Amino acid sequence: MYSEALRLEDIHLSYRGLIGTSFSKPRPLGFFESGIQPGEQELISGANLVVQKGETICIGGGSGQGKSALLRVISGLARPNAGKIYIFGEYIPPERLTALNVAKRQVGLVFQNGALISNLRVRDNIALPLRYHKVGTPAEIEDKVRMAMDLMRVRDYADFFPHMLSVGMQKRVAIARSWAMGPQLLLMDEPTAGLDNYNRRNLLPLIDNMRTLFKTTIIIVTHDLMVAKELGCKITFLANKQLTEPRYFDEWLHGDTAISKELFRDLRTSG
Amino acid sequence: MEVQTNDKKLTLVGKKFHALGMFLLRRKAGQEIALFVRAFMSLFSKSRSFKTDSRNIILQTFFTGVEIFPILFVVATLFGTVVIIEVITMMGKMGFDDVVGGVMVVVIIRELGPILTAFLIAGRSGSSLTTYIGGMVINSEVDALATMGVDPIRYLVMPGLIGGAIATFIMNIMFSTSAICAGFVMTKVAIALTGNAINLQLTWDYLSTEILKAMTLTDFLFIVVKPLVFGCIITTNACYQAMNIPRDIRQVPKATGKSVIQSFFYIVCADVFLSLFYFIDYFNEISKII
Image (cartoon, rainbow over the protein chains, first blue to last red):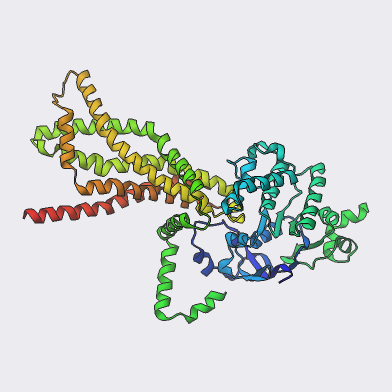
């Protein structure tokens, strides 16, 4: 039994790799034609990361550094030009690195904008993957959906369409949808962005619950460094196209590196 | 990468085969055929469930077929009226009374019926399928589906494909039927309104027997085959264009236009291709006479 949830080795990603999801393109096409071309601009070059099972880790960094792109690589939506990805100790060869294959290994992704299916009600949105994968009888699915809605406190909005909900609410529904699938590794893209202080304070204990109760490994991409402090997890920064060594919030705060000087300047002065 | 190193281990035949496959897959037509095959095969995937699948397909059939019926009926009726009046007057004048049924079968049932139906469906359902899936791509809903392990090809393309093909088939029969029946009624109305100025003696018995006499076994076969092929072409093309949209909202209308125009083009190409079978039929008959 491997204790690692995720291992990234020397990931290279160019801007070309970000284009489209190309579900219409046959898989061999992208695979045989990938590889680094000379003179190509890279977004991420040589990122390494190891996440243990049950660990929570935050990925920080300035905007435009490719934080979300890194999550897209992990979830199989973007194709890295080079590098190896291990999920739960299992090497995923590049020809298998598609979103569907990664999702099969119980990896969930919460999008920045929620990405709810707009013609389905909240209830059906949460139930969609459960029904698709036939996780139990209809009654069991109904129970699970109700539980997920209770957990994220969106039960009162069960019969609403996504466009009727606020951004924060949509994000909560998206988290509920990911949670209902019972993921072992949950990737979250800016879970606190667009939430007001009240909801943000409500959301963090929920994330905390999830990792203590369900032993979910969580990777959070955020520019909100206080999240890491409140969750008490390690932070790694995406700087100079590479991931830094993960460290705890306080270590960064009192550290002497360029990153901690730049990004923690405000926090230092305010105490 | 791994397989590129394995590439060197391939034998000569293997290399040629690989090159051929990659050549086909790089072409748009090859990719569309691959999408069609994947969508069709996903019908038998592990997550199939008869209830939801049939519901999705019936919804799509309803959307593609039933809602287009009014406009299709009007077009078919007017088209049928024109064809009936023109064919009977012209052929009567030239003394080709015995081929009236044959011409009508060729024009309405064999050629223009399926094509006009396919054009109407491409313009309405094909374009709406493209905008619908394209919008989902832009909102990264398709990505979300994939990260939940829901195959977008199965969830979005497959019902559109099967439903579209079934709806095109039904609508083609509707088109031919209403072109002949409602066209006949409209012709009678036109005759009555103009006081038979065009001097046309037309009865239902005459029209129906002429048409039924002229129908052959190939016609019956192609009533089924043609619309199914056209329906598959329209929906596959629409979904392919939609899935290829990069994250740019301005690409959605472009893709929609492309989907409709290319569907027209592919339909006409497929029609010519299918008509080759009729030519073989003709040649057989001609060689029999000689």
